Image 1 (cartoon, rainbow, N blue to C red):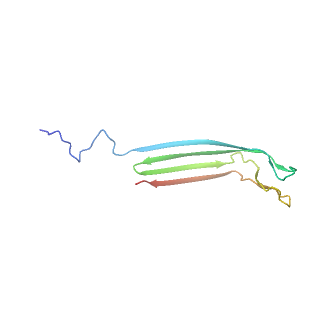
Image 2: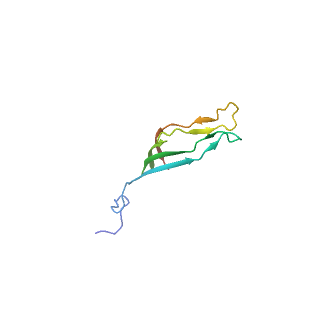
Image 3: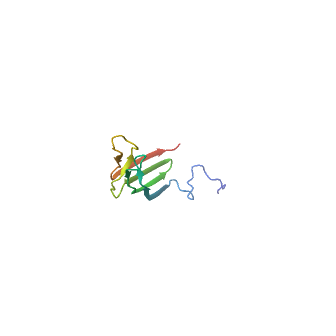
Amino acid sequence: SSSGAVQSSANNSAAPSTGLFSQPYAAIELRRISQMFADDRNSDAAEGYTIVNLRAGVEQRASNWRLSEFIRLDNAGNTRYAGSVIVNETNGRFFEPGARRNWTLGVSAALGF
């Protein structure tokens, strides 16, 4: 005979004991910068440019843990451009080169409590 009470050590088959959640993502970033003049007379200027960056990753969650991995490719087209302009630089060296194609790979883990 059963009293109908559930023992505290009983396995509840209607609820999972563990779970895993995974969320992938991907993105394309487009950055457009217009022409930049280098002095007050507008006698010299850096040309405008467009840069494309790509990124992708995935995040997993299980119990109290969160794990994230990502990869990023900046300046995917390896565009040459003036990354900065030194306005009114007296020696006429107004332009500094922008970063060439480069990539970053990363992993992070976090434990919540």
